[in-house]
Image (cartoon, rainbow over all chains, first blue to last red; front, side, top):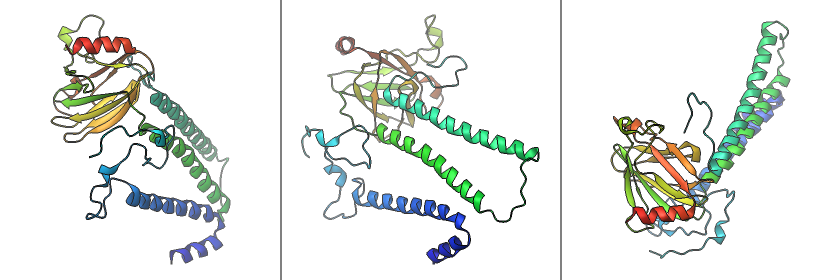
Length: 83
Length: 227
């Protein structure tokens, strides 16, 4: 329904196309990032029976953030004891 | 510390603060461009050199969608880059714990044995001549220069915030929570900061002083103070 409204408006006022593209990609990007956080962020626990506290299983050589500017996490050594 | 009537940032003493100052210059340049454009259009309109009786606004709609989008992208990309850079875990050499109390900071260097002390502001009545009013403390936080330091900030009673503007650091001290930040002093020197979260009567009187010294001097200090 929203898509049909967007298409009819875009045909009548083509100058609105950049607006739809920008807002649409912003919304899709935000939703994708939210899904990434829900699925891969170690602070989030969905499965309380099998994986109750994923924040206890973090390794120093894993990269958890989306971008890494200066740091190559894979070369960090794990020099601390396990729980 | 800031000079009298200083409006701009204090000199950067860490790589992150240098990045932040560069980004601030960039953001202000963007703001200058926008304000100049608005002022120009305003003068054109007020002197009746820019009028419009258009009903089909396709071109202008295109312009005032694309231009702000480009401005926002030009601001967002460097900002996110610095944000991710600030959050990186970068193999610290030393860990320092800063604990906020009402109304002083206490510091613990738990990599060493028994190295912990309280840091109270020196009252103005006891301040030697030439020292900085409301900024000096009795025991400074000494750190080695050019070393990555992990600082863990927390509080004992109410909210505080550990801030040193020259190093580009501000981290809230929350009771029951450990907040971690990273410090890298590029050069030796003394860097001042003040508690940055309202915490009661003496909130303005619990400053932070970080003294960055070469590693040999830091080692002398740490062995002398813990004895």
